[in-house]
Amino acid sequence: WLKSVGSVCGDLRRDRAMGDSVGDAEGSQPALLDNPQQAPTLEFDSWWEGRKGTRYVYISYHILEGSFSVTIDDDDSVYHIGTIRSHKTGDLIRCWDLFVGAEIDVLGRLTTLRHCSQMTTQWNHFWAKRLIPVRERLVQEIYKYQTQKLDNWLTWHKPAKEAGAWNLRMLIKQITSLQEILAEYRPSLAARLCVPAEMHDIERLHFEQSTKAGESTER
Image (cartoon, rainbow, N blue to C red; front, top):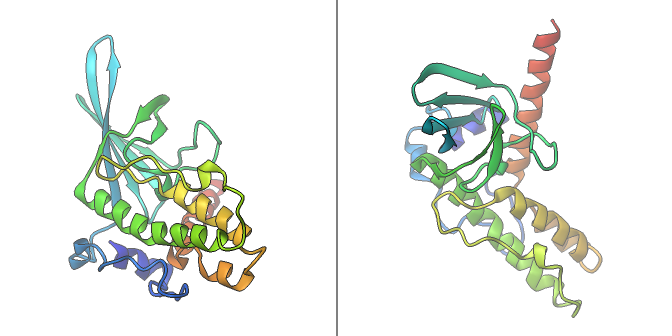
């Protein structure tokens, strides 16, 4: 799936130098790369409780298109949803916002993502392994220059007991904020200890797809 993303984004810079190999994945890319033609899709399931009992819902996020499709038990329809916004911030939900335990608005219902597919687990784990060493290195470097304790949220993460439960968006925000702090002391090093470039490429892909969809709607 990552090769599929790469074919659209261009030559994704997987091995971008970040100083002392910080940000390396500590291993090879997921085994799913054996099937590079498979369209990258994040898949989750959840359930809704109602007067008629429990209804299971299946949510797919198509990374290349930045769109969702939803199916529900006892309903033959497939609901295609162009975008979903965070009920907390109003920001568009992207692939980094989706993990086991996340809450999103699905067809007007606040839905907790309960489980995910093996492919989604590997996607989530792969990027967490890229981000966590960067965050840890940033913290180490900052404490070389200051004794003041960092805000708790900059190093906090919920133990990922369930498969696919790493909050990648939180890790990205932590790294960005830690970079700003380190830049006060070591700007060149702070610039190297960054979010992997291909993650930004995927974000730009989402923006381009959203722009194209908007233009098609206007026509």
